[in-house]
Length: 244
Image 1 (cartoon, rainbow, N blue to C red):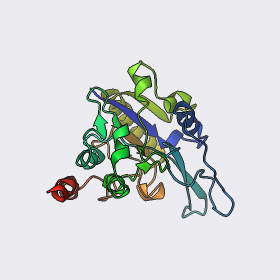
Image 2: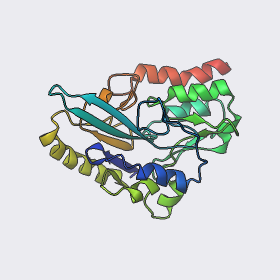
Image 3: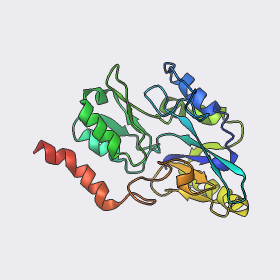
């Protein structure tokens, strides 16, 4: 049975402990950031080759005039059937691999052999807009599910660092059960609470608001919620058609 995350946004306080833990564990380089005139506490402004995880900040005014903050710990969803794998491997064998035991989707060093246009196509094939290219070495980057940690029986760094229980990790069956339990609790306070694409990903988000009020990529971007099969298959065929 594969592993899975449950990210419960009802418990996220945007402390960014998970974001920092991810960066430290993966020994990622610091980014030069500037919050002045950006209008948000979100920092850095977007995912990049040195940030596999990012707490997205979104605020809006409710009908009663109160301001509501939504925090979204954005990262790779480790899709059950990852489009990025099919797209990348259509150009370079084993550029992306999926571990059968854990379900982790891993970008290998082979991704550096993709040219910029091919790398961009891999990014565009992702329904959550996650992959980023390292301009120094050409490799595509994203969350690794802390594969080396979980292979040693440890929790992912982000889960280990979370102080509120927003980040959870374990066997998929256990996380699905926990998600249903947490959702039932959340709905008592947040009637619009939902699970984001739970059947298609191994990183399940519990949202307390409409997905659009979190982030443009809170749910699969190719449709209102789930990955459209026709578009998905069209993306898979594209690299093979180009090679013919």
